[in-house]
Amino acid sequence: QLQLQESGPGLVNPSETLSLICTVSGGSINSSSYYWDWIRQTPGKGLEWIGSIYYSGSTHHNPSLKSRVTISVDTSKNQFSLKLSSVTATDTAVYYCARRQQYYYYMDVWGKGTTVTVSS
Amino acid sequence: SYELTQPPSVSVSPGQTASITCSGDKLGDKYACWYQQKPGQSPVLVIYQDDKRPSGIPERFSGSNSGNTATLTISGTQAMDEADYYCQAWDRSTAVFGNGTKVTVL
Image (cartoon, chains in turn brown, yellow):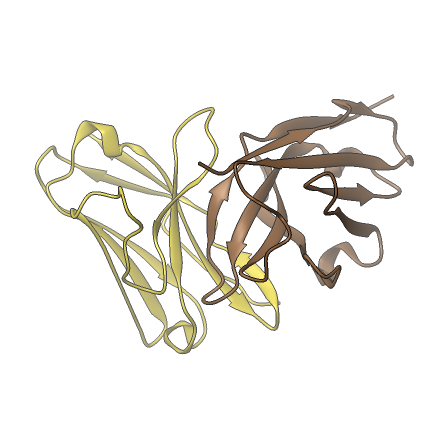
C-alpha cells in the first residue's frame, strides 16, 4: 500500500526558504505512470496546487507562485522535495504531497500533511 | 486565472440526497474530480474523470459534468459523509481547486 510522508521544519523565518521532503513508501517513485505533486491548504485560500515533478525530473508549477518554487526528485531515496523561497506569513499552511495519475490527472494518494508556520 | 465556484455549505437529512455543484467556464470540456476532507485529515479522492469512483468509495457517491457545471451527488447520505468537499480541474497545465463545500448531515 503506497504511503507518502511529508517532513521538514514546522517554523520558517520570513524571507527565508521553506524546505520539505516527501518520502514515498510501498511503491517506487521511479515510474512513468505517475506525477508527484505538492499542494497546500490555508484557511483563507483553501487548497492550492503548488507544482509537480515527473520521475524524469520534468517539473511544472503554479504561475501564481512565480519563480519561488523548486521541486526536485531523488529516485535513489524514493523522495521528492519542495523549496519555496522568500516566504512570508501568507505561506503559512498545511503542505501536502500527493501522487497523481499520469492519465486524467487525478491525485489518488495523499500524505497526511505537515504544518509550516512562517514567523520570526 | 481559472476559477471554480462551489456553494459554501449544503445541509442534508440522513438518507436523503445531497448535491454539490462546481461551476467554471466550460468546465464540461475538462475532467473534474472531487475530494472529501474530514477535520484534521488529508483529502480523499471520491470521484475522478467526472463520474468514476475509486475502489473503496461507496456507490452512493456519483458525479456528472456538463456545460459549466460539475455535480457531486451523495445518495442516501450517512452521518459519516459529513465533511468538506472540493472539486478540482486542470486549466493550462495548472490544477485548480474549488473553494470547498461543507456538507452537514442534520
